[in-house]
Image (tube, rainbow, N blue to C red; front, side, top):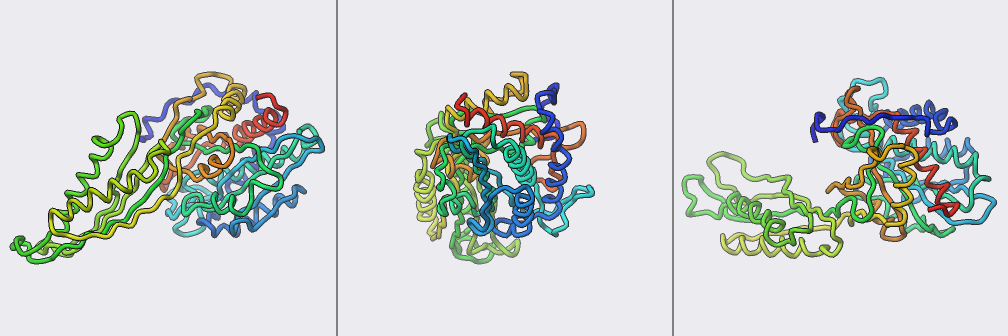
Length: 407
């Protein structure tokens, strides 16, 4: 995505953001910038978790800490019986050196909130603040999950294994991702597949090295690698049903030490993405078949390490209807709702959605006029902080509709 490709911001009417939530904006910005200044990598979010716990303590909200190492769950229970809804926010950063010249730039060298998780955490805190003060107006329980390590290796599954969806049992879950592929004032939401499954591989090719002028005495690992890379692209174009979207990408290739030496070994790494959960296992098998055949042809050997990271993010229809109805209330214009927003990016929110019905949605956060439109994982990533209060309003209204059974 280029900056110029981002659509224009629609007319934003903040009158639908209730005054009490608009009044939280200063706090939301302060919290977000606190997290942004002191980013931490997955399962190392000790300072982040401590700040969240302290803030929840000051609010008087019951919470558990140390779940899956650094995860936290805040529980807001009404006096009136009703369903249990979870809200999930991830809180880890990325191993990226920040290049933004801003007062709140990262103080941790080589680590940056370049994907909006600082905003997700601030929105979750703001939602907890509002719901706690209005808990008598609700029915049932809201569990707010502050999750570590979304960027890898994944904190959702360990939190589920530590019973984060139990005691009380959660009926449904929602979450959002600030999204610089969409402008401020929009919501991307759809039922079914929203984000892709993520699989990864490392491949070592073992040939026979020699002089670059005497290739007949060698087994060229670079030539073998080139054949494999080209052949892998035929999986999607010639083996897969054209109605199934998928991507096979080789992102790394390392071989050789000199221009006149044929390398005896090469190493490549890549990723596979797809939406259809029935394809799990297919790419591993087909990639291995292609590699084996090419290596046999050239007389090379290989070692393939293949692993499955995240399943696809698949939204429940009923919960998607809830989020879409809330988005129409908050955004006020149908043009602000993007129903076919999908990405081959992956997210471990998928593990929660495998356990219980839910909806994950994108909240537009780009503002091209203010230079806040760099893509996710870019060293100059930043977003329009107006999205923070919009996010709180979205979550609060989803809670109200869900807990009162008006979906």
